[in-house]
Length: 436
Ligand SMILES: [Fe+2]
Image 1 (cartoon, protein in one colour):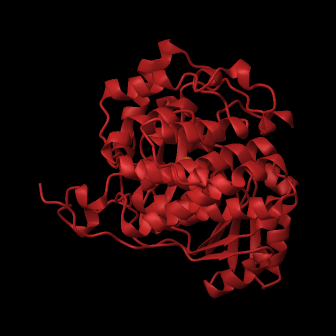
Image 2 (image 1 turned 90 degrees about the vertical axis):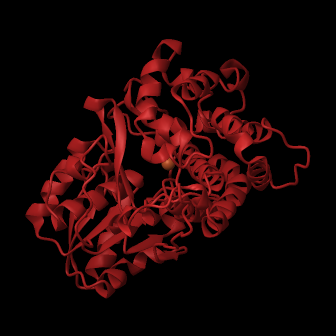
């Protein structure tokens, strides 16, 4: 095998700061849009956030048509509805306003409207056809209202495929938004549980990318076209991931416990974008690969703090539950980086770290922000392991950047170890995420 010698440095231009969303119209005008589709979900519309953005867009003389049916945890079906709306509407620009679900739906609507094809054709192989977008998309402005997915900064759109009992995604550099606007003022009123799940997603993005397989340990592809968006850890992605880890450790507990702590919530929003750039370059692996079947296999759990229109496992919580066991497994690939990740979150040197240190730092954070104790709390037991493993092993696009390439048995052991990261009864008192 010839090793890769090249990595790519790419990042979404992001405008950050309180009040930044007022520039939405100015940014769209700069990008040449005159009639845009604004993709949002009903909760965000009801909170008045979408309306504020639309006002800012119209003030710049741009026509804005709101599509308010982006679904939390979008499915191929809900994305198809947005894509049909996009095709019919003859738009020359797209705006996503909301959590990762709205932003991902906006990416797919833009893709299908610009280069018409069935959504499944574009979904990553082997789940979908793996078709590459034939050219750049129409201008896309991404305005996140949660501090989590970092979708404003990434080239990925994730969708739930209930028929296949898994999630998959569309991943290509052309899906990268042309501009992100990250405005901490939009986070006002987000429930503690949403802040918890989203924040733990940020932390996991950062750890997974920080410890991922180094780019120069990968095989060099035959052509530049075959170079994947997830290229493995590199000197530049490490910078973004490390800063996101530091902010996650420093600000997530505060952001969850006090909805009015704009300093903490603002830093978590920034951390989400930083981690998005980091993992958009390096990639995520085992916890995210396990999270997809955890979120998809059973739709029975009704998460506190979220809209109650359909049962689901919020993404961040579906990811974090297997993180302690996953990083215990990957530790031997690079002990120093695992120690460093633990130190960045803990905010202090940990000279005598071992394979349990990073898992412990993560477990402490999970408990403090009211995360579920493990996979069992989400409705699974040992009898589901085989099906969960099968779903996780389908995520080869992710697993190839794991620092240790896990076998089916390895993934099964990680899931078994993740059933309970602590005894749930012992944690029910004093958990800030559950009190609200
Ligand atoms: Fe994630």
